[in-house]
Length: 365
Length: 250
View 1: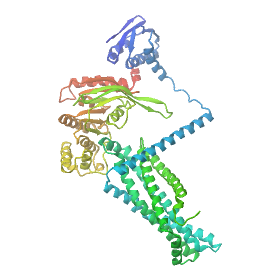
View 2 (view 1 turned 60 degrees about the horizontal axis):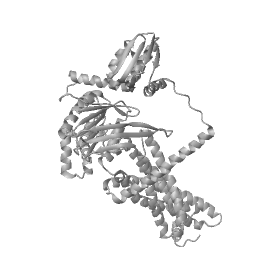
View 3 (view 1 turned 90 degrees about the horizontal axis):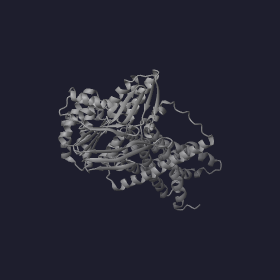
């Protein structure tokens, strides 16, 4: 013990330095003192560590409860700061400060802007790293094939059904309106054009974002929660190459195929609507649709689907990688993956349509 | 010396954006082949320190000197890959080091023999008990023969008997491979049984409050007076850290 405690009547002189090693001696010394009033003199005490201070404080509190009064003298600022911490912690937590409503709302906006900026900059940086890994890393064949099956083959029934129904609805609506002007013969052209340019790729992208984007986020999020992502990183694997690249390649392959299937399903729906509601023979519908379409219309859906593939696979993976904490955040990541993917798909679709509509041969606006 | 930390600090931000210290400043030196236990109450930053050493997180200030070499990490929940069987899980880290084929398989087989799981090599993690999963994780951590092995409370969720068996296994494996080990735990008995040196950490922010080599001979007996003495000494330090107001009872 480098410090000393001397008890003389109702005065306790504490001098020197005290650390955790002196805990036993300090405890037995202070415990042994009994008096109605005690003056604790720290004038010659250089330092007391938190452990000793906590013990001194707890003993004096216990004695206080039994009726002893205490007076503390001569504490240097460092020692006082340590004791003050215990005093503060004993107080009840202060009432929450009521904020000015206007200020609060502005603070809220600022906070949301910062969070959004954080997400956007994170997504941009993640996209860059994902593409770098895509072009420089190895292709993992079996796992890529697995994602192709999950995101492509398994999605065919729902993609076909929904696009066929969209074709039926659009064919009926367009045919009904056009028949009032005797222009129902133009329905196949309108339908084929709108399906190939917008409805087919867009519906497919929304479905794949809902099925696969969410699945990617949930899968990676669960891996994060179970520390499997940390394990991969510690082993020295490139996370982007190992986790994100197979999903990107799988969607790059299956999305164009799905969009093509969706386009034909949608046009088949229009054919059914033409037959059912307008009495249009199939050969007339097909001939009119072929007259209206150029090969570029079919390629255009495929080109757009490549952009959508990148958006869905990267956003789903990004949201999964952002998971922190427990399973609840996996649910939040899954929702965010779908919402952000669909938002970006529509944003990119609008930009592409505005910028590249002039590429279509024979189109003049 | 295997690694040294100088004035290492880490801060986090709370929801209001205010930054608070979770770690440090920490100064620590670990010698090659040493078995160091980081002992401390929950939330004192032990895991954060381990994550910084493994490169999973970056410190906000300070210096880390780490000899280049292979690193093994055993996570609290094992973190085995559920889509791989036991053997593939153990072989997996070797792929990153470029070892494949028969050598890969023989090294994994050797480790699985040592941890007593050779006959379960084709089982999947969900078919194993908690203790078997941790043994697989241990084998995966050691398969690259790492110079530095980091373990984050690997036996915390196991029953006492299984935990003791695995402690004995870990100590003998690491002794055989001369691996430098940093073992995080909040179990004082586990630390006193395993460690060459114990570093006790206090919290808010996480800092070192006691750093002491153990002069206990091997093999250690939990019933010896020397063991009990050291155990009580560390228990006293530890209890003071967990809840200073607990002393109000006398």
